[in-house]
Image 1 (cartoon, rainbow, N blue to C red):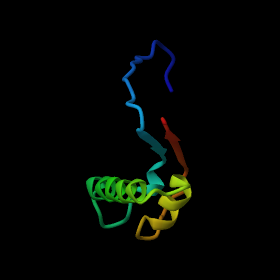
Image 2: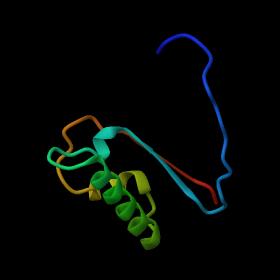
Image 3: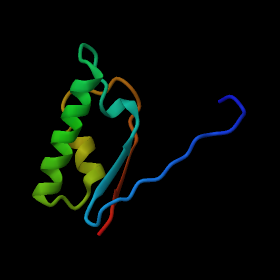
Length: 80
């Protein structure tokens, strides 16, 4: 990264929200657009949260379809 000032910001996170941080390996697949992968992630995460998963990170890694072609890291935060 180039030296210099960085922009920053903040946003409120509602009570009960789940926040998922991930690397590109979770959503990128050969032959698909990034938007398809992001949509797949949103649908999968929503279904898992609705089903009451105990470990969103583990279940996202297990349930995301298609073989990952890159390393994958997921960090999930819940705001009870």
